Amino acid sequence: MQPRADDIRTALAGGVPDAEVAETTLGVVARVPLGMVLDALRALQAAGFESLVDLDGTDTGELIELTYRVRSYAHGAEAYVKTTIAYDGELLSAWEVYPAVLMPERETAELLGLTLAEHPNPKRLLTTDGVEPLLRKSVAVRTREEVRFS
Amino acid sequence: MSDPRNDVLGVGLLGEGLHHPGEPPAGIRRVPTGVDGLTTEHLIINMGPQHPSTHGVLRMLIEVDGEEVIAAEASVGYLHRGIEKLAEHRRYNAIGTLMDRGDYVSGIHGETALALAAERLGEIEVPRKAQWIRVLLAELNRIASHLVWYGTFGLDMGGMGQFLYAMRDREALLDILEAITGQRMMFNYVRPGGVIADLPAGIAEKIRVFTDTFDAYLDEHDALLGGNEIVHDRVKGIGVIDREKALAFGLTGANLRAAGVDFDVRRARPYDAYAEMDFEVPLGTTGDAWDRYQVRMGEMRQANRIIRQCIDGMPEGDHTAKVSRVLRLPEGEVYASVESSRGETGIHLVSDGGDTPYRMHYRAPSLFALQALEDVLPGHLIADVVMIIGSTDIMLGETDR
Image (tube, rainbow over all chains, first blue to last red; front, side, top):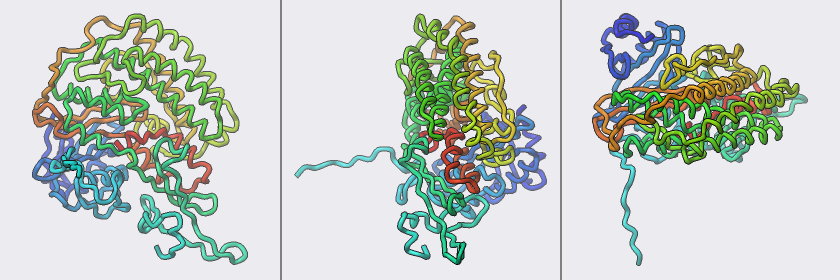
C-alpha cells in the first residue's frame, strides 16, 4: 500500500514543517531544503521507513537534485525525499541515519562533483583521481581530437 | 603512513588505512607485545581485483590480525563503463544493450527494469503475451544465474564437481535463451512495449524437456553441496546479516529474504504477468551464509515452477505493442524495479520529453550487498571471507556499471 501525501506530511510535521509534499509520477515526494535532509530522513525512519533503498542525483542544468528513496517493509510503503544542492556543494552524509547511503553517497558525490562531509570514508568509489564528474551535463561523452601525421 | 614499511603492500593508497562503518579510520594498528614480549602488527591483504574468489574484479582490502579479519574495505570501479552516462545519449530501444552489460549473468532483468520504467512514463500498454514471455525469460535467466552462483560457491570451498554439473544445466538454459533471443548472454530482447520477437516454433517442447528434468537435477545439486557435512561446517553460522543489518544497509533479494524479511518485488509490486503466477517466496531465519544458500536453492525450484506455468498457459496475441521506433517519453520521472537474480534492480528514469533519457539511474542490488560486507567480514577468519562474499552473490558488472 502506497502512502498518501498526508501520511508523509504528518510524519514530517514535527521535524520538517517546511517540507513540500506532493504525489507525483514518482510516488509521494517530500521536497526539503538541503539543511533539513537529515531531519526529514530521521522523521521518516521514526515513522516506520526502516530502510533506504536508493540514492541518486540529477544535474538539472542549474544545480544537482538528490533523490532519496525510503521504504517501510512493515507497511509495504515507499516515499521519496528530494533536495537540491549547488554544484561543488557540500553534502552532509546521512550514514548515521541510514548506513545504506555509504556507497551511494560516494558514487553520487564523485559522479556529480560534490564534497562529502562527515562521511566515514569519503573516497571516490568508481573512478580514479582526476576524472571529471561524469554525470554533469557539461561533461561530454565524446570529445574530438584530430590526429595529425608528420 | 606513519611507518614506511607499511607501504610495501601499496597500502599508502588507502590514505589513513582501512576502516568500516561505525569506526574511525583504523590504520595499521600495532599490538605492542605478544607472547614472550614479541612485537607484532596487523597485515593488510590485497585480495583481488584478479582473484578467482572475488567473483569478478572486486578488490577487497582486508586487515588481519593473524587469521582474524579486523577490517575490510571493498575497492570497486574496475568495470566502470559509465552506463548511466551513456544511456543519456541513446534512444530508449538502444539502452537494453547497456543494461545487459550491467548484471551480465542475468541481463533480462536489467532490460525489463528499463522497459518497465519507459512504459510507465509513456503509459504504454504491454500485450499480455509479451508480459508472459518476459516472465518466462526472467525465470529461465534466474536459474541460469543462480547456477553460476551455485557452481562458484562450491568452487570457493574447493569443490569442482558441482561446478561442472551446474554448467551442464546452465548450458541447456543458454541454448534455450539463444533460440529465443539469438544471444546467450547479451540478449537485447526486452524492449519498451514488449519483446523484440515472438517465441520461435517448437521452443515450448524444448523448455519442457528442461523443466521436467531440472527438479531432479536440483535435488542432486542440493545433495552435492547441501548434503555435505563439510559444507555445513564451512557455511553455517558465518556471515550473519540479520534483519536489522540487512535493512540498515539496504539489502534486497535473497540476501534480505535470508534474514527472514518477506519481500519480493514480484509479489509486493507485481509487474508483467507475475500477478497471475503461483509461486512461493523462500525465506531464511538467521541471515547466515547457509540461509542464503537455502533461499537461492529454493528460488531455483520456484523459478522452474513459474516456467512450467508459462509454457502451459502462454496466451495468444502480439509480442509487442505498437511503439514508435523513435520513442519519445513525456516530461517527468518514474521509478521501476524488478526482482532480479541479485535483488531489486531499479531504474530511476527522468525524461525531458526527448527521445533519450535526461537521466537514468540504475540501482544495482550488489552495491548494497557489498557495503554490508564491509561491516560483516570483521571478526571472521580469513578463510571465511571468500565463502561470505560468495554467499551474497554479488556481481561487479552491476556494482560498477
